[in-house]
Amino acid sequence: MSKLIKYIVPLATLIVGTQAIYAATVSSEPYGKTPDGKEVTQYTFNNKNGVTVKVITIAGVIREINLPDKNGKIANIVLGLPDAEAYATKNDPHFGAIIGRYANRIANGRFTLNGKTYQLPLNDGQHTLHGGPSTFAQDVWSAKIIPQKDPKTASVEMSYLSPDGQNGFPGNVTTTVTYSLNDDNELTLHYSAQTDQDTVVNLTNHSYFNLAGENSGSVENQQVQIFAFNYTPTDKHSIPTGQIVPVVGTPLDFRQMKAIGKDLRNNFEQLNYARGYDHNWVLDNYSPNATQPRLAARAYDPESGRTLELSTTQPGLQFYTSNSLDGSVIGSSGKAYRQTDGFAFEAEHFPNSPNIPSFPSTVLKKGDTFNATTVYKFGVQKNSLEMK
Image (cartoon, rainbow, N blue to C red; front, side):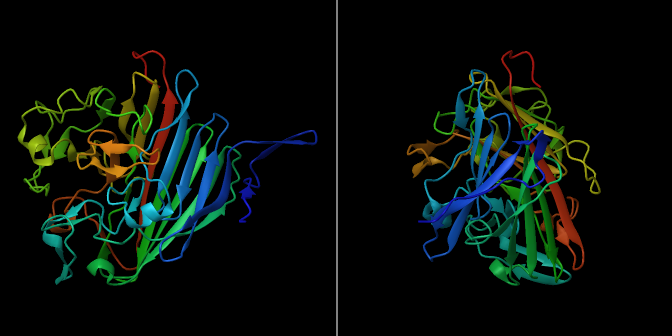
């Protein structure tokens, strides 16, 4: 029998007399094997407020985020799958996964870089979605626990080498994602990537949130705010047209907190194309050299009181209402997932940026390092008039 190995962050202690009081902790344990026999590890984070986060080495998937509600009841707020085999073979919705090499869509699976045209496999009609099949989202990553000097924070680093030519992308790309949970209920993901050839990179996490609990049904009554004056409209295949237009006067206006379902069935062409929300918002106050995340979006569930704030250094946010879930996917609690059972906040660069020069560049040059940080801050409020 595999032995549970528990690591307490070595410096995460406060000494009172002879007694050690631990703050944020992280532990590791086996989480089964992939169909081809690779061992999978699960890392479990805990903080002093009862928040528990579980991450596995398949695609760096965030399996669970367990939070108390306004009455202290704990629930997992992210959608997921039942076991390692399902994540390795059936995670087409990309539940909780790190997406690469290129999150979102590339038109016709083709882009030109340094005068050379690269053809990628097509897995979304005539286009390439989330880097193509069998890449970051299904493979097993390397991982290690990072000792922290701050007793309020526990961290795990995961890394993955995407070989030159994987799904048609140039260059050997090494990606590292560091997960940190602190006692302020902040889950931070820091992304970095390096390449030995010029290439394109767009990284994100693809968690689906349901603040009432992953098996609680539709999120239509949950409320969302997105700090973006503009968005990038698409054609009927969800490929950006290249325009950047205001959200004002459209159902995509989330500048003030509103229920997800309020305008979901509006007869608006963009919503009809995507069968719901599946668009890129151009986040306010973006700076390509910024290292400090700025507030990008908030969500609130009036029933449970749970809240989520997302801050990021990325230029865009893909807000998605799980439009492709049709009951064919059985979730981690044994129930079938359907449309609007979760929403995704995908902090990333814009879709199809390699083919639209006016968008923020996703080119990663040899010798350079891609860096991005996204922070998910969780909370509870009892009064719907306040949100902290």
